[in-house]
Amino acid sequence: AMDAVPQGSDTIDGLMRQAVDADSDTLKAKIYVNIAAKSSDPDTIIKYSELAMEIAERYDDKWTLMACYDNIGWVQYYNYQFKEAVESYNKSIEYATQIDDKHFIGATNLSLGNVYYELSELSNMWDAYYKSLDMFTELKDTSYACIVIRTIGQAFTSVGMFKSAQEQ
Picture 1 (cartoon, helix red, strand yellow):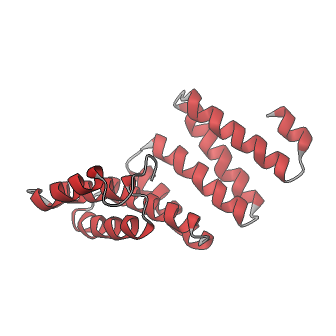
Picture 2 (cartoon, rainbow, N blue to C red):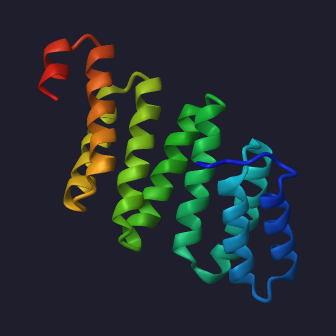
């Protein structure tokens, strides 16, 4: 839901018109994912993710399923439904792994680490953060790697591990 726009915006309305005119189910599913990803309204995100998932399951479209579970996890996280968010993010990572989308694996592990932080599940948090860092390091994506390192440092500091934070 990055770069989210409000419901009723030209972007969302245009995508909804495209979905009506789409000439295939798979195209319609991709448009639904795009609507969910661009929306700032949790109900819209869930609705269009679920519509896309119905189609994606029929066609075994792992990319769409990966993106939908990620969108749903984001809504669950911001609605303090942390256990549900863990499930959704893990399903997203499972599909990302099946299609070898390493960037998505890295980004979703970062989100998963944030959920584990909220649950005070520190071992799982560190595991997810370091999986994210490893993935972005492997991809040589220094921008994302720096975000993960900053997040790890903030986590160390917030749990009172100041010396470890300085080492990051």
